Amino acid sequence: KKLIFSGIQPTGTFTLGNYIGAVRNWGALQDQYNCIYCVVDMHAITVKQEPAKLRQNTLNSYALLMACGVDPQKSILFIQSHAPTHAELNWILGCNTQFGELSRMTQFKDKSQKHPDDINAGLFTYPTLMAADILAYNADLVPVGVDQKQHLELARNIAQRFNQRYGEFFTLPEPYIPEVGAKIMSLQEPTKKMSKSDDNPNACILILDDKDTIIRKFKRAVTDSEAEICYREGKDGINNLMTIYSCVTGKDFKAIESEFAGKGYGDFKLAVGEAVADHLEPVRTEFARLSGDKAYLKECYTEGAQKALRYSGRIVSKAFHKVGFVDR
Ligand code: AQP
Image (tube, rainbow, N blue to C red):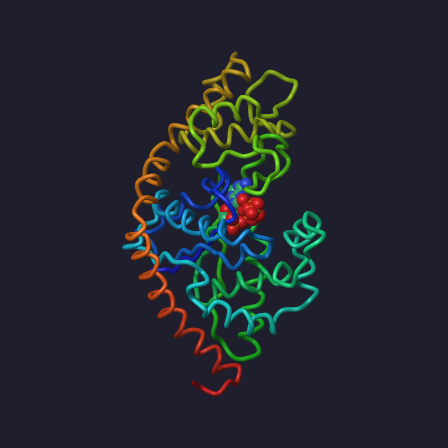
């Protein structure tokens, strides 16, 4: 079986973008692949976090992944900082990454523009830690949204460089990007991706939003001045709503176009809102149940960390040996 690795930052509640582009696929892949998933708290501190909130968000994200279908009995599900192997391998990989490569990363450029008062070294080397997350397990496939494609390509380049320098060792990971929904856009600025850290609360649907909130946000979604519901270049707002509707109902664009032929944007937005809210209802219910059971969650993440450490420990020790460190 091929090995899958992916992670998500505990920077807040997941958005509908995180859910459709990445997380909901994680559960679906468990039967076909060996899966390792983690809450990447170390990545989260590349932008300022309030400690108590980060801890809470990390535990909530862990429970939320389970509520979205990740089963800790089938997959290894853990918290990144619990496996120090990631930080250890990060150092080795950082020494095999060029300053120029990191400077070209669009996420670094975007985030340093957004936080000009805190362009820290961790933000700059974020992609080497992400490469370490993946390479520490020699993962074959990495399910991500389109925005992470560039980081994944860098991870492949770093792995390749290491292999050339020290001999074949790391597997070159492939991105696993969904055909529809790999980039869900902001409801307020549909040319920008939907993001957890958007300042405008109407721009993103959080997967724990209640039904009324979800419907209200969709009603306010920015569209265009036409009146036709169809998927066409230039209709960014409608295209995004159609993508979302398609992802939660399974209907294709043709079917959606005929369903709403002759109807107005108001009707369509309401239908999308209701479909999303109904789709997310079981996630909200399961999250409420799980987050109340702290002891069980702790048992799951402790066991997850042990398995992750055992797995990555073997690979990282070999990488240390390859670069010429004395065996411990
Ligand atoms: N809008 C999106 N559409 C599809 N996929 C998305 N992902 C993120 N936004 C969208 C995918 O979700 C996974 C986890 O993302 P992350 O939390 O690790 O980092 P991110 O990409 O930085 O997500 P956010 O929501 O934009 O968070 P902030 O605002 O904190 O930076 C990834 O696989 C990502 O591709």
